[in-house]
Image (cartoon, rainbow, N blue to C red; front, top):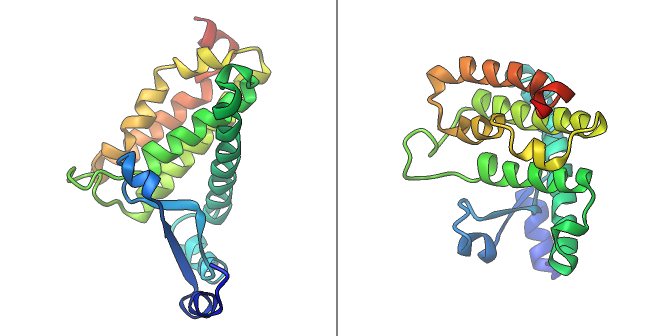
Length: 191
């Protein structure tokens, strides 16, 4: 990657998608490594994203990138000492990262709904995943355990969201976002 011709090419193209054989072996497609890939066009497109997708799209994208980076560093700890050595908030990062990887970044090319998605649907998925993370973190602070949070039925709804057809997605998204408001409160978790 540091070879001069490669660096010059990267500057000219302005983007780099790092393909990852480990992701392909795990059947994660597209097998693009999110931590090793980048685009120099992100700042240029920020205004367009705000006007055409969502006012907070760049911030959501950055938060997702941050959660995935935190999850990657925690995975190294998990491989060394196991998941039981992590605190609940760290296990939440692992769970949120797993959901982002499997339920947002991964696509099923054989499924007619999941093979592609519009920017508004992707924006909705991003909002749902990050709201899960925020509300679950609040739940941890109010006394819920990570095991209670992981067993909440709303997680299954988040996992199925990518398979909801475009025409039905807005209603589904709004229902899940409303459910997330109360899913991890003290009464909801202990009920």
